[in-house]
Image 1 (cartoon, rainbow, N blue to C red):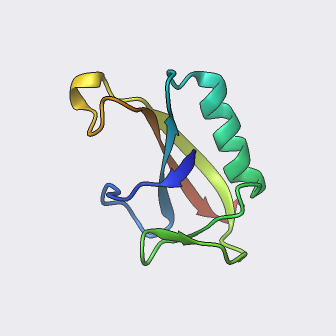
Image 2 (cartoon, rainbow, N blue to C red; image 1 turned 90 degrees about the vertical axis):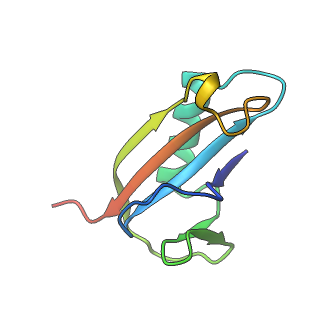
Length: 96
């Protein structure tokens, strides 16, 4: 499941912090690529409200994704080590 991080890192308002969770298996690069594609195309149907650091079902124009950073923390740094997950940061705005 691709969800906003409930405890996002402190980032600028136009940066979204998402988590990709995977039960009973490890997150891999294909999973991350698919999640990024969902975010870029809007197929996840969630709107990330930067002011609340949460999502709503509202469809809004929040700008295109300009850049993405993703990573998987080592097990000893994961807040929930029993469920594999990756972090995805999306920078939104307008490219020029």
